[in-house]
Length: 178
Image 1 (spheres, helix red, strand yellow):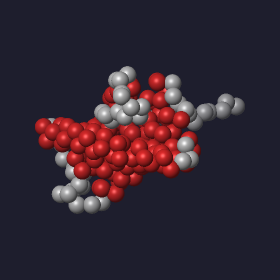
Image 2 (cartoon, one colour):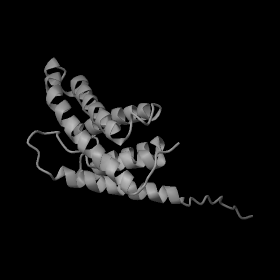
Image 3 (cartoon, helix red, strand yellow):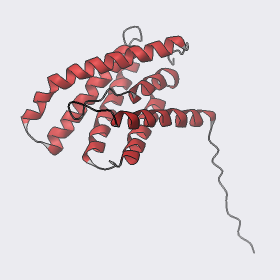
Image 4 (cartoon, one colour):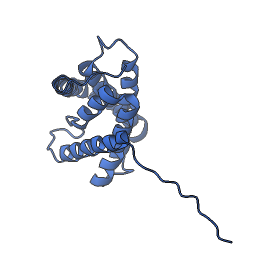
């Protein structure tokens, strides 16, 4: 008697392949960004977030969440920071940003397009990181003294990334999911 093994074939769909390419682009941008000099630790332009915003507009929130989480994990593996404090700070910021992006998807798109989504997500990212730093790394109220500086930077980079995303979406006539 011969036993037959049940073979399950996993064939990636076209959308799976598209998400993998977009996640790889986001990881590449995150790795490049890690090499950029920064006058203050933790301040980065968040270039990979442009990919997340484009995915959000083209494919919806769930796809944007996949791309974001793959980026956070893969970039940390490439950069050697997986499970280090920086990884958890990045994860906390990403999760807070995704939560805010989910909320903006249920609000009128007339008021919440790529620019406002980018700015709100950048603020959420900063608040998520500072909250985790306060709870886990530096349980002192002085952590929150960094909020005004990080809020200004979040606004600047959120605005610039959102404008770039809006330009890309308009140029390629990519619409918002219904």
